[in-house]
Length: 328
Image 1 (cartoon, rainbow, N blue to C red):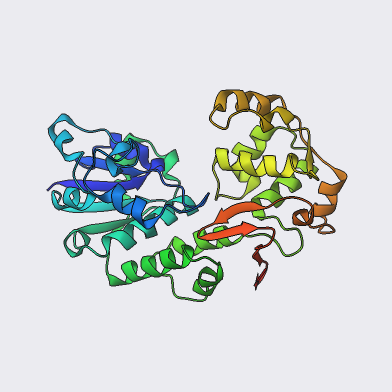
Image 2: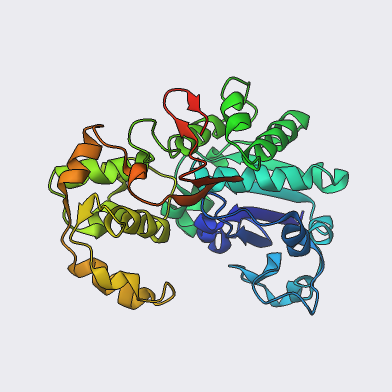
């Protein structure tokens, strides 16, 4: 029986597990920046076109292609699925993975024949922490169940809500039955917590940065990598750096000590930027202390320009959440 595994970049260990004939990984990070257009995603899943830039096709990322199946690289994604008897979905509880899962299920739901082959693994731990040998041994203990209309419908309505130009549909979903996808509600709650606060204009991760700095965490690496202390799980290192720079390099900083040269170093020059982070020693400004105490609103003095799903958050369109949703 030929087996195909679909997973996120966190599941790179599955490629060494011998659990499938081939493992396809997806690298989209739908929790940061504008969402890809429907046209871009259609081209991503289609058969490879000579006009398609390298890196914009489903087969371009994180896949070890055995020699015997290299001729499958240029197929459309659906045509690839047709070649396999079982298609397993391995996505962990993180918001990054759950967004990829609902996006993928939404796409596959319109193709009846691959949909019948789908099995969803109930992964409850971080895939990135599980190595190939460990995955091979533990696979029998990770439940797998058939994807039915309930899973497809839950994924469809959640992906549609997340793509909306306001957060309102996603907030409404929190009052819906999402139990078909057991890891989805906690992920959605984590995402909603990153909407700006009514009193501070900052999301959960930015506020946690301020809390940790108030307790003496002066090194950016600690803010980025000590997840057990940060206790927010939506963003990766690059995104955390962008949030920290927003707090430290705006017109009225809440954070002092971050190297000012980050303003001019190219975003792609990761080594130089990393060196600046390593030598920075951070602290709260008096304004930052006031924001942390909910006495000041960061967005009153600093520009806001980021995306939450399909919602473009700016100072003029600052949707806020906590505990209810507040319109701009």
